[in-house]
Amino acid sequence: MNGKNHKSPTTARVLKALSVFGGVQIISILCSVAKNKLAALWIGPVGIGLLAIYNSLTDMMMQLSLLNVPQSGVRDLAADIHDRGRTAVNVHVIRRLMLMLGIAGMVLMALLSPAFSEWAFGDTDHTVMFAALSVVILLQALLNRETTVMRGLDRLRPLAKCSVFGSVGLLAASVPLLYFLRTDGIVPMIISCYLVAALLAYIYRVRDIPAVRLTLKEVWRTGRPMLTLGMYLTASTFITMLASNIFIIFLRRHYGDAEVGFYQAGYTLINTYVGMIFTSISMEYYPRLASTIQHRFRTEVIVSHEIKIAMWVLMPVAVTFVCCSGLIIKILYTSAFEAALPFIIIGATGVFFRAVSWCMAFAIIARGDGKIYMLTETMSAVVYLALYMPLFNHFGFIGLGVGYVVWYFMYLLVVYAVYRFRYGMTLRRGIISLVAAGMAVAILAVIGYYTAGPWISLLLILPPAAWSAWRKLLK
Image 1 (cartoon, rainbow, N blue to C red):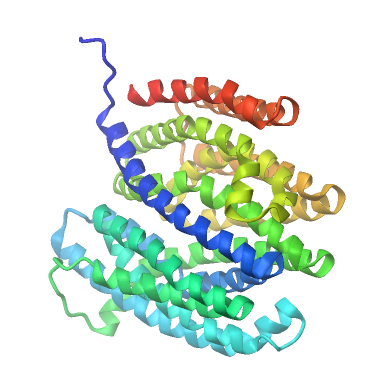
Image 2: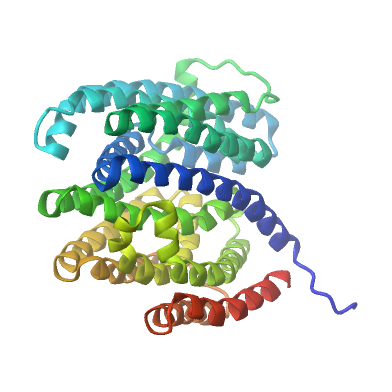
C-alpha cells in the first residue's frame, strides 16, 4: 500500500458523471444567472410572477401530454442495453411515441387555453398566450425523443454538448426579446428557448442504431409497458405540479404577483441550483440502477452508495448556499427579491432529506412500480399544501422554509416505508449518522448566518466541511 486513497470504480464513475454534468449545470446556471438578472431588471417581480404562471401551467400540460415516456423509456433502454436488436426496437418505439404524444398534447393545450386563462387570471384575456404556448409541448416532445435515447444508451457526451449549447442558445434567444418587448416578450422567449433545445437535440441525436420498421400496432404493443409506467409517473407528476399551481394561484389571488415572483425565485434557487447535484448524479445513477434492479443486494449497495456520495457533496454546497444566499439573490435577481431569503436559508437544510428520499424513490421507478410511486407522490402533494398554505399565512417566507424541511422529512419517511417493507431492502450502516451530520452542519450555518454573520460563518464552517467531503470522496 502506498498510503494514498483510491476511489472505487463505482465512485469514480459517479464522480465523473457529476463532474461532467456538474460542469454542464454550472454553464447552465451562468447563462440562467444572466437571463434572470436581466429579466428581474427589465420585467421586475410582476413579470417574474407572470413567467412563473406561464411556465407552471405549460409544464403541467407537458407532463400530462408526454406521459413520462422519457423516464420509462430510459428504464427500458438501460435494461436491454446489451441486446442490440431489442435496443433498435426500443429506440424506434420511443421516437414514434414521443412524436405522436407531442402532436396530441399541442392540440389539447390549444383547445384548453381559454380555461387556463380563466383559471390563472380570472378572465380570458390571456387565451392567445396560452394557445401560442401549446407549440412548446411538441418542441419538448422532439427534444425528449432524442435525449431519452442518449441517456438510456449511456451517450452522456452528446447529451452534455446538447445541454451546454442549449443553455447558451437560451440566453441568446431571451435577451433581445425581453429587452425590446419586456413583458410582451415572455411568451416568445419561452417558445424560442424550446425551439433552440429541440434543434440541438436533433443535431446531436444518436445515429448508429439500426433502422427498424414497425407498424402502428407493433409500436403500440411494444410501447404499452412504457406507456403504462409512464401514465403512473405522469399522474404522480401531474398531482405534484397541480399542488404547486394551486399554491402559486393562492399566492397570486391573496397576496399579489410580486409574492409569486419572490416564492418562485426562492423555490428555483433551492430546487434548481442546489438540485443540480441531483440532476448531475441522476444522469448516470438511474440507468445503472434500472439495469440491476432485479438484484436486491446490488440495488441496496447502489442506493446506499449514491446516498453517501450525495451527502458528502451536499455538505459544502449547503453551507455555501446558506451563507452566500444574500449575494446569490442580488446576482441572480435584484435586492427586491430579498424577501425570499428566509425561505432559502432555512429551506436549504432540507436538501439532505430530499437527497435520501430522491435516491430511494428512483428504486421505485426502476422497479416499474407505478402505482406505489403515484401513491407516495400524492401523499407528498397533500403534505406540501397542508404545510405551505397555513405556514405562509401565519409566518410568511420563514414558514415556507420550515415547511420545506418538514415536507421532505415526511416524504422521506413515506419512501423509506415503501423501500423497507414492500421491497425488503434496507439502507447500509452509517447512512442515518451521515444524514444527521449533514443536517447539523447546515443548521450550524443557518445559526451562524443570523448570529455571527454570513461571511464569518462561511469562513468557519466551509473549510472543515469541504475538507471532510474531499477526503471521504477520495476513498
